[in-house]
Length: 196
Image (cartoon, rainbow, N blue to C red; front, top):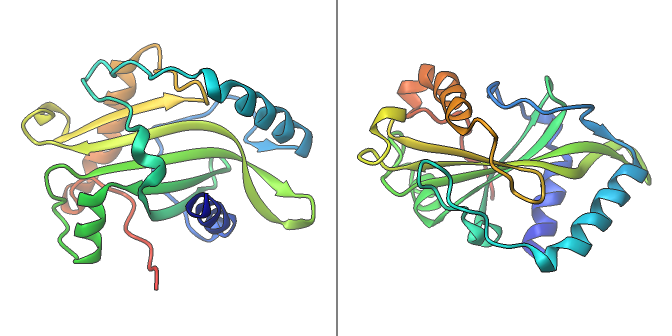
C-alpha cells in the first residue's frame, strides 16, 4: 500500500515530464471531475473482488498481475491526451536501470505503463492526480519470440476490467510504428527517473 501511495504521490508532479509516445489514444475527455473519480473508484472497488485473470494477449503476453509490487521506473504526463502515467519495471528492468546496463535492455525486461485520466485535487486545485484508469500497457523484451516487432512484445489492456483492444494486431502495429524510430534507445521512450 505504501508503494501505491508513493507512486500516486510522484504522479502528482508528473506534469513536469512528458512522454512522446503517440500510438495510444483515449476516448473522451481526459480530465475528470471529483464526482467522476468518486464514481469510477466505487465501481472499481466493488468489482475488484470478482475480477478474473485476463486471457493471454493474442501475441502470448499474459497480464503480469505482480506489476503492482514492482518498483517505480518513471512517471510521465502526456499533454496531447492529458493523461498521467506511472511506469513500473520488473527486477530485470530495475537491475539494468540501476546499473546503467541499457541500451540495449536485457532479455526479460518488462515495463508496464499505467495511464489514468487526470483530475484536480479538490483540496489543492493546482495539483493534478490520477482519476479513473484508462489503460495498462506493457513491453516485454524477448528478441526471439518478438523478432517481427522490434524484439519487444507489446500489449495494452483497457480500463479496470483489463479488456484487450478489439483489433489487437493493429494496436500492436501502432506501437511498433511509434517506437521504431528509437532504435538507438532500444525502442524505449521512457528513461529511468532519478530516485535518490
